[in-house]
Image (tube, rainbow, N blue to C red; front, side, top):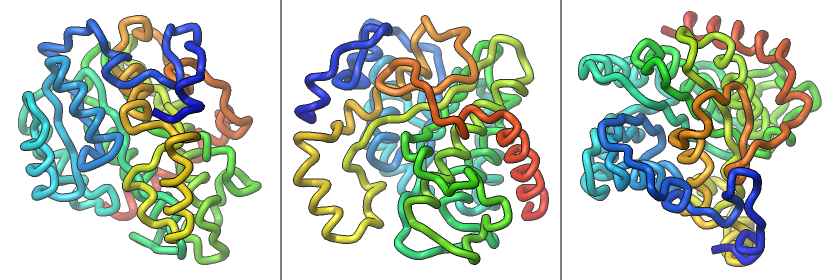
Length: 306
């Protein structure tokens, strides 16, 4: 447990920065419920899947490929269904959607947890900067492709980040989504996390059934495999300061598990959470005109590459 996290006081929910995913779900019986978690191969996704299964839920654990998904499903006790899904590959996403739909299962929540962070140089996939495509477009394609399998009271939880405040000055560089006309590792990551937040907010206005919800979360700052692209000096610094300033993986998974499962949030829609409590986002993160433009552009991108 990070030293500063341990000092954080609980918020109105009764939880706070020191809360773990197990604590956020303590006393909940999730038997009979089904959840989908992307990025289950490691870090926050694996902990999220583990705790949901611990509470009795069936978990569709999505990882980058079938081999990794099967490995993780074997490491997590409970009913875990392995699904390979590379969110940077539209064909892989479509295959995952087909496999999931074929099970004829309806879901209590989709948790969009997977991501890449701060690539040191611009990498493109399908003509778009990789963080934008993987973190946002991939999740948008997956979630919208499965939305008809969300229960009438189902929830969508999208992992954003406080890093959404570090985006480019335009908020979203719609004229440079390839990154070819200038690239900053952290601003590109911030842009992708802003896209995650705006996607969740806009989806909240378009859910097909009243009673369904869509929210975004900031997990906190945690040393996870997400940091694998940082330079060695930054990685070492992160590991050195993590016991004092960063959350543990168990704490980092708490907010997304809380928002996906807690009964008190059944009617909370289109919001942003941190430390298991409501959080005010940046102005860009509340800009619904920007969200609508992103939604339109994302649909255009997906249609063009399918």
